[in-house]
Length: 396
Ligand SMILES: Cc1ncc(COP(=O)(O)O)c(C=O)c1O
Image (tube, rainbow, N blue to C red; front, top):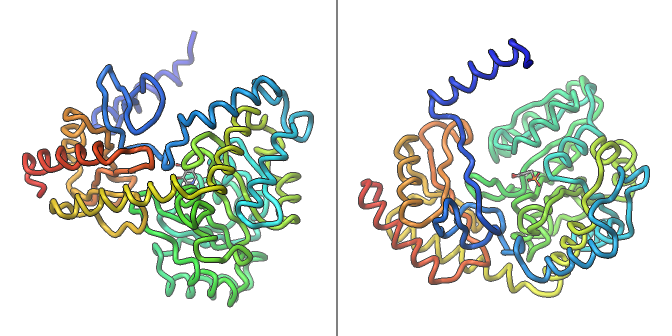
């Protein structure tokens, strides 16, 4: 028998979500994630994944994953501190450190739990964290978990950061003060002003933490936003995911040997959750090897990004101020945005609508994530469909 309290809670809250159109029906992909996907038997051009370099279904990564599975097994068998570190995990971490040009790196099972673990391993209730107001949910939750005082900083506003950094450091209220930011903001595609941030961080001795989930593989010829600005030895935490451009699953922090040593004894997801599978670790290593050897996929991603942006702009769409291949089409009204996305799907494009509360009210958008795997033919088809639906719904 299930609890009456629980049933009441679930029914009431699920109904509220459904009545307000906020209940998210999850689509199932019948096959791999790639430039084209199949949903409910319909083939669609996929403009919604973070599979920037097309690695999620790349034969080179799949081969390495299969080989590692044969060699090491399907699971690591235990949390890493007890019995679960295999040589493939060590190899992944040293590859990550080399790629990020840091002394060391530590891998986690996901980007989300990496932020939960890494922030709370260093910051505590005697500290303060200055956090860009548009930071990702995993940063917000990691900051909350740490118990530190969280001070929101206006998005990409260096004046606000300076004022708040001065207040926090001079107040005498906190032992340590950190500034944390996304490297690339995934809803708009803008890039954190890391040179400006470093200047302020140096002035006030802030700890710096960059979540480069959307910058890794995309910025800095693949090595990320910190490398793009040449600030490898100025940023304390270079956090990233292995689930987006790398195409697999996992997260990591790259930094000094002392920082990584500390995370390995204090970051709770590392200590209390079984590690990445050997197959996942091997596929990630292959992705890093490919990115280190050539910028072919990276360059193709950027070419496709430019092509799509130019095409949508020429059609008269508002594509915001993205500095990366992420291409939002800002429609504004929430309902219209949802109708727009639905019509795109009917015509053959999978591009999800993103509305309040994920983005500010009145800035509903359909977000396009071109990848290295898209062909020009596919992008031309996307532009033709955008034109048709844009005219039909009076968006252009
Ligand atoms: C900025 C940012 N950080 C962290 C994450 C979490 O990464 P993962 O999906 O690897 O858990 C995401 C994923 O959406 C993200 O966009």
